[in-house]
Structure formats: C-alpha cells, structure tokens
Amino acid sequence: MSNWTTLEDLYSLYYEEIFRYLLQRTRQKELAQDLAQDTFLKAFNGLASFKGKSSIKTWLYTIAHHTFINWYRRETKFSRYSLEETFSLEQKIYKNPEDVLARKTEQAQLLSAVYSLKEDFQTVLILREYQELSYDEIAEVTGWTLSKVKTNLHRAKIELRKYISKQEGDENEM
Image 1 (spheres, rainbow, N blue to C red):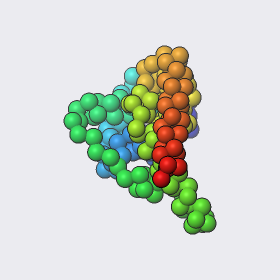
Image 2 (image 1 turned 30 degrees about the vertical axis):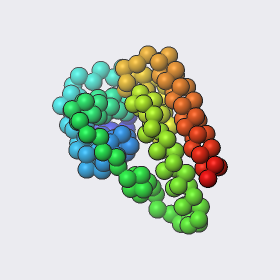
Image 3 (image 1 turned 45 degrees about the vertical axis):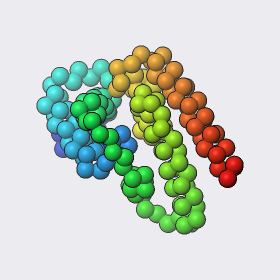
Image 4 (image 1 turned 60 degrees about the horizontal axis):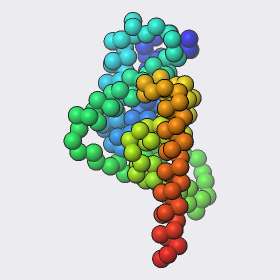
C-alpha cells in the first residue's frame, strides 16, 4: 500500500498535495482549505469502503475532484484567485530576482491561458501537468475512459498553443 499507518499519517502525507490541487481549481485559499478538509473527512468516513484497487493517492484525488465538482455545480459565481498568490506557495530559496520575476510572469500567463480553456481541458491539464498524475490515475479520478483522457489532453494542449500564439501575436502588433 503506502507508508502510512494512521489517519494522521495519511493526512500529513497527502494534505498539501490535495490542497494545492483544490487551490488550482478554486483559486481561493480559504475555499481550497475547506474543500481539502471535506475531502479528508469523506475519505476518513469512507476508508472502510476503500478496496485497494487503486493507490490511496488516486482515491484521495478522486474524492477531491468530486468534492470540487459538487462545489462548482452548487456555486453560481466563480471568482478568480490571484495568480500571484497561487505561486506564493513555492519553496523559498535564493534565486536571481530578474529570473524569478520572468518565471512568475510566464507562469501567470500560462495559468491564465489554462483558465481560459473549457472545464474538461482545465481538469486534465492541471491533473497531468501540475499534479503529475498518470493517464490511468486521471481516468480514475475523473471517471473518464483512458482514450477520453488522452484525447482531452491532446485537444487541451492544442487549444493552449492556439491561445498562447494568439496572445503573442497580439503583443507583437503593439
């Protein structure tokens, strides 16, 4: 299984990862914390139903994904979380300030481009590129077939390239 023996171990091993995923989805720190807490509460209450057919990590991501989807469906207004605050979660080590600023600007532009895509494309890109889940894990989390995951990821990357190319073209015209 994994290297956890108690519920506290499970929580400490995966909370940060689940929180970051939910933060990327909601763009609201407090909401992501609430949804992460809900995720672990559901997981702890349903631990007896975990059959071990997938990894515990994939199972937690599935619960987090469904918790987010349920919140999203209930929510009528979708407010954006500041991109700068999203990247404030990075590890703090010394870097050249110009490089950091350039990288943060590129990351903000990339995330803005990701957020411009339709919801299914955002989901698959975030799970694959930011959370680094495998195709099989993404299929399990979303409930999609493996071919749908691959197709959506491929189409999402095409749409992302189009968006970025369009933005670069608009900047060159100025």
